[in-house]
Length: 258
Image (cartoon, rainbow, N blue to C red; front, side, top):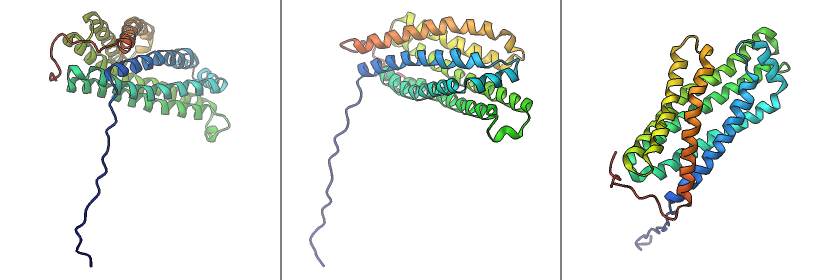
């Protein structure tokens, strides 16, 4: 038996350099721009066009007739789901210099929203199943299949609305970070905060109003303008940060602030 002392070989691992704040802002801005296009197509151009809450049979007929287009819209939602996870991480890198915990809180709120979007997408798959007359749901009557199809697509909307509550909170945390840190102009924090507020108002209205559908168009108008302006301005700011030679200088040392 050898008495030679054993030596363990330790392999040195070179850590991968972390993505710079400038690059994170640039990629986040690009992802945000893609999210705008994908969401407008998937939700407004497709989902809202085929779903009629007052006509279950018509909704099922629309789904059956436009199944291929709906599947493309579902793919767009799936890409949104993946991009939102990436954006959560990228925004954390952008805002981490203003305070680790606040930046993580904003990221976790957005991750929570993204999970609900993914859950909602499952209901769209279920709706397609019910609308398929040649599938295993053909044992049901047409009226029952139509009702279940409409219910599934409406369940997607309900799940997404719950998620948008978290998205509104995400924007409010970002707004506070921007307003208090000096990392961006205060006006940007104000409009991002307004966008977050209207998302919360819409989600609360959807939850507490028994006749929300009567006022859905009003709520949509309340949400659309602040949301588009706020998030578009935020997107342009991110892209500008990504093209700037040096990161924005904070007005005060807030790296240790929660």
